[in-house]
Image 1 (tube, helix red, strand yellow):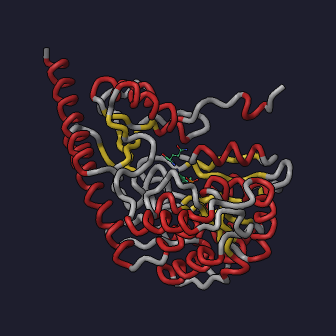
Image 2 (tube, rainbow, N blue to C red):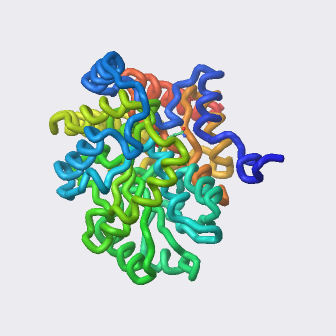
Length: 391
Ligand code: PMP
Ligand code: GLN
């Protein structure tokens, strides 16, 4: 006998597309991971910490240096004061933080509203926690969130709303009006927010990251999740952090206690160094990624994709319906891999019903020569399509 949920689960789209890319030698712009962007100071700090130790279980809540650094970084960039001793928990990646939050907050039958397009881990973890994910759809071209949409999904069993801002895959920052709508609904129904903010530092063109955690009425109702994987381009490290009011954090820390209990101490020490890096690192990350975004977006447009503006994250979603309106986006992603040698991920994988198939997602957190080659291949592919049609 196996668990009915995980026993029946398929391979994640990220793994599946990365595998196809490796098998075919394509440029992998599918799964979201950066190339050659990690700050050297962080690597050196990890090496030093590994040499010096300690190598045994660190405190369950995380090493003090990292918890302080999470609090200081939040104060420095977002102006929000956090009590590092009572309001910060270190986890093994944001994924563990999400699991801890759902396991710690939900009871059997409780409903959790998720916004589609939704990151794949949410629904599975909510369901394994006994909860019921209730989708609220954001749809192209505007991807707007309104109080009406949220209200329509509320039932007496609703307990939490899961937010992801900036949002994977669409690169959206929820604006002040959308956060105000969220606030009104949350307060009216006495809900809790789980806010996945792993892309908090990847915002472009002077935009500001905002969080329900920074709204006074929502601070004690919001579980805020971050990840060193994104902020320092080390996705394999799996160091995440949760900030929340002490009362809200307590059951989440209990779940953490029985899931991983701790996270490698040397990596925690290095991430503390990273979070304390000067503003110039964080500014450089933004401007470096914005340059990459511009190169990829221009290249995609030249190749015939319609690309929405990208405010944040390291993903560009491109409307591919101009090429083959009737083709499924998964089929299209596979075909692009084989024919063009560039791999995206289909946006339908982020919808429960998989019926929004208009867009595919490309990751631009890559070396600029990788992006140039991807763009060259896409243009050449586009020319071959034209030639095929003409002949
Ligand atoms: N949430 C979102 C929206 C993500 O895109 C990712 C990363 N891939 C995660 C969570 C997981 O982060 P981590 O690798 O720190 O577990
Ligand atoms: N978050 C990454 C993405 O959206 C992938 C993480 C994973 O492979 N599970 O591409």
